[in-house]
Length: 342
Image (cartoon, rainbow, N blue to C red; front, side):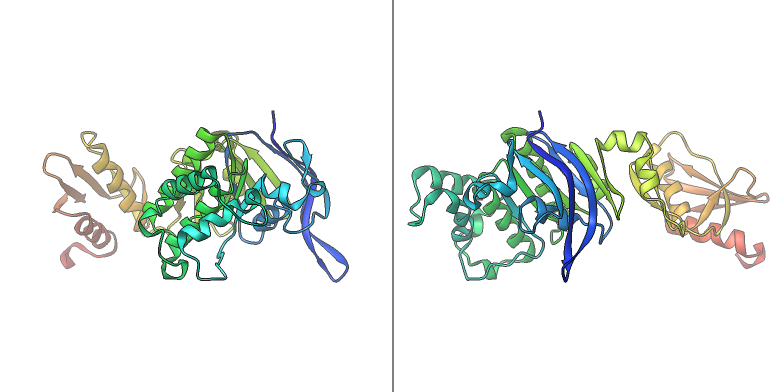
């Protein structure tokens, strides 16, 4: 059964007294324990939708229900026990220590005196441990890097202990290792705690490996939802990410974006079949340099698995290249230069 429901929701903002609709008539749902990735180009309304779900800005129309409660009808304190949010570029307004900032997540439960119970302290400790910020929990927030600071804000959202966590570009300031770690952490939290975790992200390829569901938002066209695999199989990704200038395409077999290089000529490719890794990266290198693979080409490339080199042939002549770079240079010269210049 759906725990989060959006019914005919329209989001946007007002220009003077006139509403400007960013997205209209959205009908979406999420179940407990799902990690959902909200994907879309800049300006399509991802942040606007997240802020609207969190009731940080009013809906232009429609209703949002969490646990069968209309978000607009409940008190701010009750809402704070249902929804936590981490926004892009979020800043601490005071020089809190890491632990003090994480502890703010317990505000909806502590009352106006702000006294922490043993349960509060335990949840704070757990949040700090889960986000790997314990090593610097006594440092001030302004002493941290952008990536460290982002993890602290995620820890604060965990300490708020809500069934719904919203994160706007949570990995945008992190290096590769931390991006993967954070996404795996969010997946683990969703699956093991039953929380709904909704993230907006531009990292489609990574999100596809961890998200249970994709919300694919297109500017002015609403949202298509489904599992990553369903959206690939039914052609949704191919259609959504079609580039008018043909600079790139979405490869449905690999699940990645492939840059479309202008052709630098035609090359015949004969794989070794003994070393699939060597064959794969040789082919990728040829395409990266703009060479189109064709059986009718007069220049041929053969990876040699045992020798770990490349045999390049053209019009009865053969050349040995010991590195990918040498092979590419040789192919380029053979295609564009007469033999006596080699």
